[in-house]
Amino acid sequence: MTETKSASYLIVGAGVFGASTALHLIRARPDASVTLVDRNAFDAPVRVAASWDWNKVIRADYVDIEYMRLTLEAKERWAEDPLWKPFYHESGVYWVSQSNFAEQMLANYRKLGVGSGLSSLSVEEAKREYAGIFADADFTGVDEVFVNRNSGWGEAKEALQRTIEEAVRLGVRYVETEVARIEFDAAGAATGVQTTDGGTSIEAAHVILSTGAYTAKLLADSAPERAELHAGDRFVAAAVTEGFTPVTGENAKDLYDGPVGISTVPPSRGMSPDPTGSKALLFCRTEDPLTHTHPPPPPGASNGSVPHSKDKTLKFWGQIIFRNTQSHPSGGRFSAPPPAPDYAQFDVPKTLRDDVDYAGKSLFGKGSADFKNENYRICW
Image (tube, rainbow, N blue to C red; front, side, top):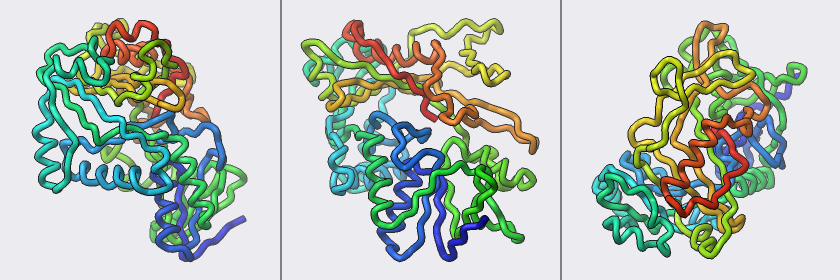
């Protein structure tokens, strides 16, 4: 069986890139045929997409000026578009870092001709900010703390779902199915995808992959003989771990209504014992016979916290960023999520849970004593 859509668009993956591409296409070309394919249901309570999350940091403070330009554009949409504005919270961002990158970011803002909202504070001044919630943070080696009051966070999964709903309302067709491979014509151009349910093909004039961490595997499975299509060193699938804690107590409102906290102060925690003596983290999944060795967090790797004023929680993310490298029958090697339908995203080893827990200690010190993280998740 073949579903043919001439002069049409087929978007694979309904995460933030796929869903927003579908929405912007149908807004710009209301007569177009746009199909959005995803392994998860239209109203799935949980998705494998990285953009499915409790909350996400929304900021434009980047030393890469082109990335800053793009994020300023996105932040404007968050703040002004009626679709996303209800999910945006401009609570501020509080940076604890040994690196003095504020001047470079301020120079970028000036080049782009926009106000930054960025200010630098002495450590003593910073300890008094936001009702003193960061007073016991680890400020080792820190001369200045940077605060941007024009940044904040977004309700990620709600915004993603609303984007999908609006795209479908405007005419996008949503198809829940698993994609096995991309299909090509004799000239090597993509013509559609083949699904895992009986070999059904969905064809389109334009095929757009928004498949995130699954992309390298999909490309290798689809065209094992075409090395030029493979991920190679162009991109790599990596993951970070997160979890959240309910916030209670007398300063609870200051925390869940407070700013995003980001720390790049090197961790003082020890790494898991490694019999090779390399002081690296050993991470092995039960469904994968390989043991992967991951180095300690690179210099500048951050951990942090994101408030959620509606849920009255804080989400933390850890500093360890890791890959899941595997061999492919084509002869290549790449990183990809575990093969479980949900990427085993809630199957989090203790070492990675500890990494998330450390974020609370780094940012809040003794104030984190009552934090009890739950619902840990690996975000690919």
